[in-house]
Image 1 (cartoon, rainbow, N blue to C red):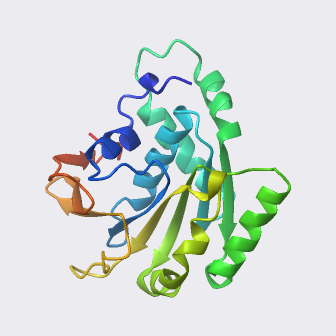
Image 2 (image 1 turned 60 degrees about the vertical axis):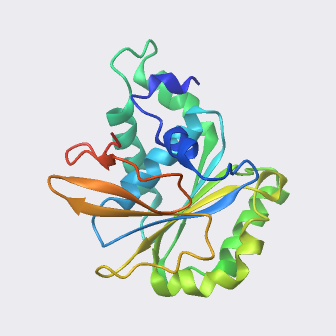
Length: 217
């Protein structure tokens, strides 16, 4: 599927600004206070990867599959250019084989359980992700996982998926950026949400999320 059907492919835009190419994976974090737009942002990144033909594993903590799927449908409809030649249903159906949604209850998530379930998918050749998004972590969850990131990077095709985490912070204090390749903060700014690079970018970006559609622009 041609990603030119997207009004803007956020994953491609961000990758061009990375200090180092992440062709063999990388661990990225999107941080913000609650309710700012992390899920919308991650879903846009996932859709951009899917349009580029990459397989995306979406891991959500605390939400049912139906709600995650609704996010995808909403962001999909908001992202397409007006000149798309195929019907929306045809485009949507062509993307679905590139996505697998995995959900956990809040008290049921841990790194060993995530590794076990993703290994089951790989061993049975059901799904081997090239991009993974993990949505719904807090600072305590992330801290528990930091010592085992090498195990996370073993998930996926050739053991090098690109992995995006969303983390809810409280106030201005953010995460420790050292263990990660890329860190982005989403913060309310005027009538929109600013996309603020904290680590891994060549320079500051003037990108934001539209306050109505939550699409990156």
